[in-house]
Length: 80
Image 1: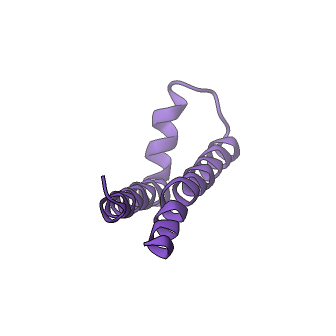
Image 2: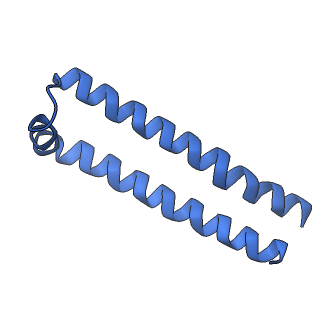
């Protein structure tokens, strides 16, 4: 396993994770009512709670992508 290979893997992981985040955001924005009704079958949440949970989830996911994928990639680029 070389540094260049590991950097490539981290770059692809970052891109794929950001694609997942963008899809999550688009579905949340344009299919909000459908998504709320779907989750409403399983959990008793108000619309404000539902929005807060999704917003916080997106923030934590984005932070995870930044800290676990993008920062190590940038560190390998600097070192390599």
